[in-house]
Length: 89
Image (cartoon, rainbow, N blue to C red):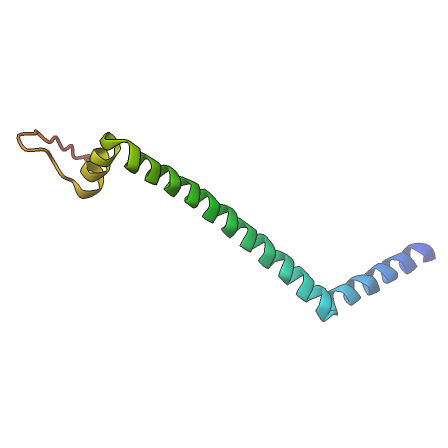
């Protein structure tokens, strides 16, 4: 029984040292910051790849440019019938 109490006390002291040590808290905070920055880097790389594909298609495919203009600017060709559907909930 006494060994168990000593182990709990030693564990508690060890945890308190870890918690109240400013260096450990700073280290853990920095690890979270690094993970966040790595996620931001991966997202930026993903966006970069999408934009590279978009530039490639804009340069090589005239139909892609036409589709982009139609979708983003809502442009219609003369004498074209445009259908719009409203969704009623």
